[in-house]
Amino acid sequence: MSARFGLVVTLVISLLVTGNIVAQERQVPQSQADVQLSYAPVVKLVAPSVVNVYATTITQQAVSPFANDPFFQRFFGNKGPLLQRRPKETQSLGSGVIVGSDGIILTNSHVVADATDIRISLADTREYEVDLLLDDPKTDLAVLRIRDAGGRTFPAIEYGNSDALEVGDLVLALGNPFGVGQTVTSGIVSALARTGVQTSDYGFFIQTDAAINPGNSGGALVDMRGKLVGINSAIFTRSGGSLGIGFAIPGNMARIVAEAGAEDGQIIRPWFGALMQGVNTDIADSLGIDPPRGALITEIAKDGPADDAGLASGDVILSLDGVAVSDPASFDYRMATKPIGGTAVVEFVRGGKSNVTSVKLEPFPEDRFSLQAEISGNTRFAGVVAQVMTPVLAQEMGLSLDAKGIVLVEVAPGSPASRLGLHQGDVILELNGQQMIDLDRFGSLASTRQRTWHIVLRRGNQIIRSTVPG
Image (cartoon, rainbow, N blue to C red; front, top):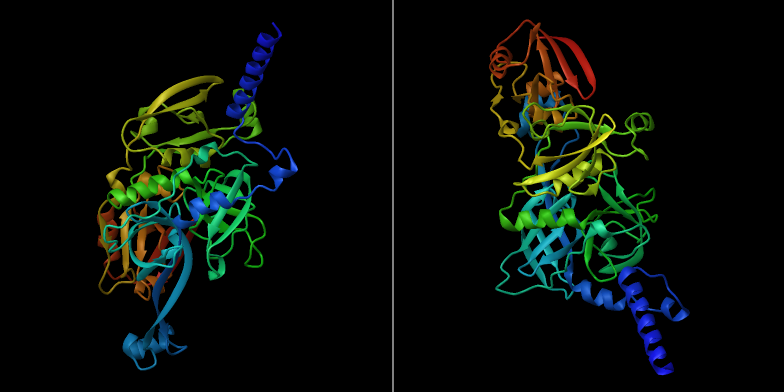
């Protein structure tokens, strides 16, 4: 009887322990021996996948301090003896992560921006030239491929699920800070879903106190299983060094960019077709949302995916495909990780009642790249490339979806338009009393000579009115 009882007790204890281990993947140290455990096995697993990235850029350096002076340009032009420019070669240093055994590498967009030559060196010091497959400034990610790999396979890191991270989880950061060589630092996840860190459209960063310094950009943030959960991207600093506040792009976003780069070199994201704002306490109380959370729809683009799904201004989105949405930034991030095609399930609140609908995952409309007009000739607007405002452009510029006008998508440096004071991104609303809502009308008027120009334009949130001679 006692032997049977002892066997039962043993089985119960075993089940409890096993269940505890399954239920709690995360554990704090239980003893001094646990505290003395090493990260070395994890580092040995992932270090071969982290590379150094060397990017060379060529800039034009003016020989004369008067090179940009309009007076000298008027008499000598860009070929005058005082205005000769010479190329200046600069090099930037960053890190990267091998995510494909065929030599696919992830790094930061800002590491390789405008580079004329990019090379990488592996942990074993072998060096390779690489090709840039995809540069995506919106996520600050770039995809590289090792050139002339000769059929070799490379040590690719495995992806982890960055959505499964929790504040307090242990992480390691690997990279090449200050060019001293591959370095590993440890820390914890300090916060999740940080926004406003960079100007990228999909800023939704993992914050960590693992030391990240210049040169770490593009390196790996890994969990205790050696899985890639983030790409180190930015730091908060006053001195140029680490202050214990570093930021990484979530691995789930990085994986989508890497796969797009390896497949066809372009990334196509779904367009929702709505503007949103955060939910404050008053809005939450009026709709019975406790605690305050979600993304409040303020505008809907006609015939866009949100409109077709039956959503309307005043609706508050609470989740996307079952994942909670805390604010507009988190919605944009979740939407940006969805593949084109199919649908996504949106849970929203309208009039205090919870509802569910399906939104089609469609690409941005083609009118984003609609016809453009380039102004040239003897006119004050020579040097601009203009495009009529569309809902997609308006959303990208942070304007109302029904905004009108002519958008200056390019203004050539040193051109008459540039000297007139026009900037890229300006929206021309009126010219000489005529509303600018048609590209042909703008092109016809802007190409002529006028004694005086009365210009009304939008620059950011400002309306600027000016009168200048023709």
